[in-house]
Image (cartoon, rainbow, N blue to C red; front, top):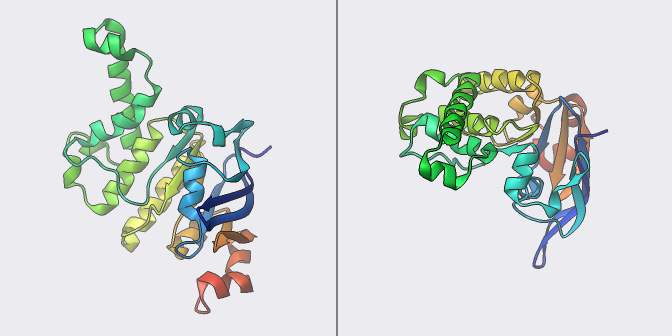
Length: 253
């Protein structure tokens, strides 16, 4: 059974149809890429999966749970983590505190315990800090935990966002253009981190324009064009698909 199922999803914004009857599945342990030109509907689909928006028709299932009926924080509690296309780093906070923001969704002590600094709250704060530091170490930022996040270069900001998502202990991680703005060395480092995260048991769906990165890291690729799925399959099949070449990849690839 698929871990995540997108079934006949359509999304309209007024008269604009951003997604048109899109279906695909994501299986446990996969790295699956979602590609297509700007305006193809990729971020819209991520918004539907993460609970930020609702399908006009169709369904998105995480295991047997219909994500279209859940708020984003409930989707996160179920195990859907996400990064964003544009950096959501809090520059005036430390690197560690940025990651702790992602961990607080799993906390249980409540406002009353926090206000009175009861033992339960102190224990949970310690556990949150430890889990957040582990997430930073997974992406290679453990030694920068107490620096200001505003001092991080672009590549490390991407890694910080991944660490913050990992701190919520996701089963599925949605990566929205994680290689944007990275040089070749940083992209290679990111690829290794994605593989390690996958090997640690996190299934990954990513949106990305760097085709070298996509073809290197992905088990399967889904291609969208004007909101429609035009192809799906292994990277080698996708790079040789004539419709995909015409719509997106270009003759040079």
